[in-house]
Image (cartoon, rainbow, N blue to C red; front, side, top):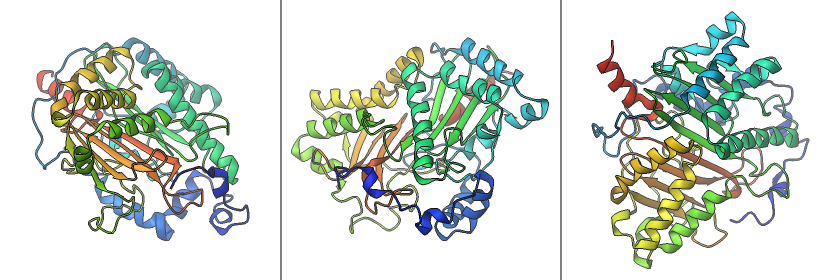
Length: 408
């Protein structure tokens, strides 16, 4: 379906039991209530055994491809990141600093999630800190990301607060309902990193020897804009995905489109996840096997290859200039072994799912049904996007392991 009607047509009435039952709950009381709800409880129970598993990495066939990730400085803004992290630590109490920090290779990296209910209270919750502390922690976004990446992240946080205001559930969904953590000790030379996650936003940022890796990433929104006259926050990704599909030949499009409907009777059992819907590389999927599907980039004509490069560039523009350039080169090195798959309609207003996958990157975009809006079919105003680095370099782990093997 399209979003011609606008998301406001799908706002629940203020007295709807879906909303009334959550009023008065904050992040912690809702966390407990979610465990016992029929829908969210099943999600939590399904994800629980995945979280503490030893990290391997997403693969296409269950086997990690070795030596894909070269240890080389990529222009990471390490000095600015260290300065911001040091200032943030100085703004906290000793007890808060202890809660915020974990070892650089801690399993807590893998606790991130994108639903509105808190599963893991990792690090510090921004909404429960004083203004100086939370602003100091949020300064990590500006120090680490590209300007457009930092703007997008903060916009998605504001949209979350907007949704909380529209539904009267501000204690559950607000601009600051996000957890922040530090991993290792901020350093110009030693590995360390930081993380933020919450409803429709997750960033995992690792620095290893002057090399920045930001992966996994989750950017999403319900609705997709802060003000009615704004452009939807993630429209460039949608537009470039449609341009890529349009550039395929009819035969290639036929191969790329796995299913013509977002919920297709021909889909195998389990292909639609109740929370992730069509996404395969979401939260807690750090070791998932995701086979290649669709059409291979080596088969594409020049225009389609250019459209694919534009889509990739759009997905990774949260990275600052040097790391973005290095990441583009890394992806380009495996360009011919990049696969494109699609689910859903192919018209200019149709909702869809797309996955771009190679040995070094997975990009996903999916339109979703309503959670705090009432649409029962996927709509353009509820969108999830994911970026992962398969074969072991999510959280910069492949680089960290190489570093640890060569340093005491």
